[in-house]
Length: 472
Image 1 (cartoon, rainbow, N blue to C red):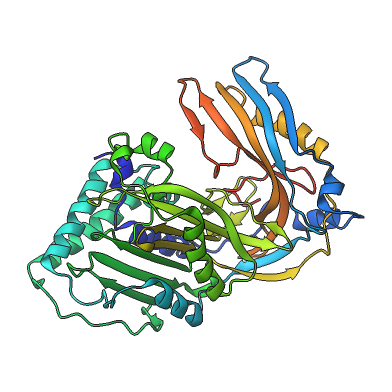
Image 2 (image 1 turned 120 degrees about the horizontal axis):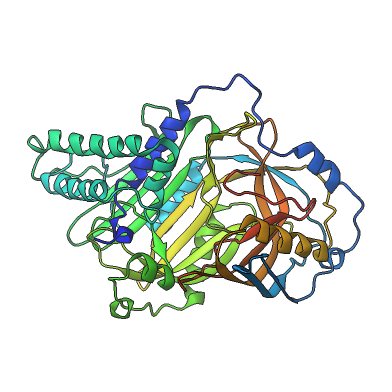
């Protein structure tokens, strides 16, 4: 089976293993520092401002230019639409990790769940154990794959040995309990109220695998100590997909799963507007401050043993004072100790997406909600657009020197990005940044055109290049 189709029901368990492993790291003796100076950035942002954002940055509606490396192996063509929010101010705003409230959990259970869900804590049946074993063994045989994002992050964070052991432990567990497992169990409906798992994590989890239903499940989890891993997953499918909420564009499906013929996958008949309307109603009921629709695009889902299906992906980000947080596919700030001795705790970026087909909302993934705090500055002094473009054309070539590829920048956006606040754990700052999106053609002629992959992120206040994986 192709690597893209090897995504497994074990992904949430592996993600949990990664969180627990992170929690076991020794606390560094040195002060925790998160990269570049927050104080210097705030001081610079506090400069004199006047006029709208568009007037201040003096950006054109479109921009054309070109650049190349000295050896000519890298060429950059800029023929882009430029998007500047229609806002008067763009303050730096502080955010911290938050949780999902019982009231919000009630909304998800009411708006999404279509059947009576039962506790997954009841004994697994022999058939359920067999399916879980097959999936774990396939993934272990395949090895780490970037296409299997969540387990791949465990591999990157802890190494192959830990990744393999996590899967082997799961295989051993299922093997040990198989003989004593029942053929069937009496279902117990869930209460819908958060309960303590015993390790400080509060969770609501329910599943229905009845033949007339197919499969429906939800998991809502609040992690202790503000770790930023609170999440909610929901799925309805024709069979057990283990809450594997993984969807890709047609282009990515062709790249990761070339054996799948998307022309044979039934298209959705529900319209883009109808799909967004369904999701807008849920988001409004969740009462998440500033949350607004970012994009609607057609995507395809493929879980092990489950046929691929077509859905609308309806994605949301925060809109702060009229300026959105720019969505990119960067999952989280990784844990690492830098050469300067700085220490960073893993912290996912906030992400909220729904998946809609003709059956309604059949999937949802909500990761790491933010608690929005005070505005650290009343507004932010921004660099002129011309200065930003000078930085991009120089730095992109420098960062990719020696790489043979043709790049076309098609979209340039001013929006917010979260960076870590210096010397504080679990505290971030929403700062204005410029992001650049477009197509990349490598030396083999393969074209990558993903509107969620930023080519470069530049701080709109001081012109510094931001590494989203590092968090600053």
